[in-house]
Image 1 (tube, protein in one colour):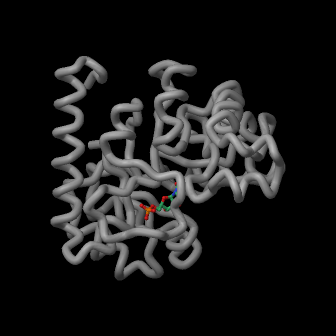
Image 2 (tube, helix red, strand yellow):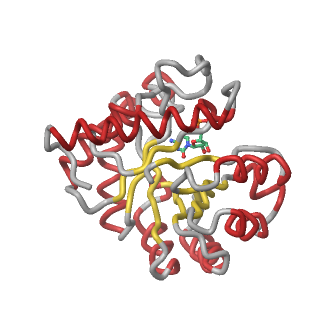
Length: 242
Ligand code: C5P
């Protein structure tokens, strides 16, 4: 189950309706800032009740001083998510503290956001003109800190897989299938199901192409079929293992 469905929705009613519609199809439901802030932690158990098989991905992208992130991580543990994110730009000490306090929970390090492109990064620092290189540097620090995985664009997946091997869980947002009606939004460094999986991605975060489709269930099924056929193709070419 490679599909991660972000529940980027304003309230519980809308989020739970989508969970009901897609129960059994999705590997992880992702709760991000919008839903978590508006509904609080109880939303996690409500999702779990509706689809006990799906994993819970709490995407708070923590980024603060090590002590604050560590304490937040201690609080987060009681919600029992399967995956939680921190920003790699928070630094090595912050990530180490997060991993230590997470005690076994899989911490993912967010590298360069897929919404950033070279020109936006360039405003910050000339070195950032090469997001791929920057992502690799951030990823290395995340792994030294003990993160179990990385969030990265499909443009960087293959490079990160080659550099860091099979162990880290690679999670890829910014997926835009050719048939998606979503275009020209905030996501800039985008890719397809095929480009992400062939680069070695483990989980694909796909939100608006599903949620904003005329029929979200049909869009989800179409993506699941694309994921399966791509994995079959890659397996036949011996590029991925189950
Ligand atoms: O497919 P769509 O663009 O709607 O997915 C958006 C989701 O991906 C949001 O929940 C956002 O937080 C997440 N995201 C991420 N890492 C990035 C970019 C987006 O987790 N680098």
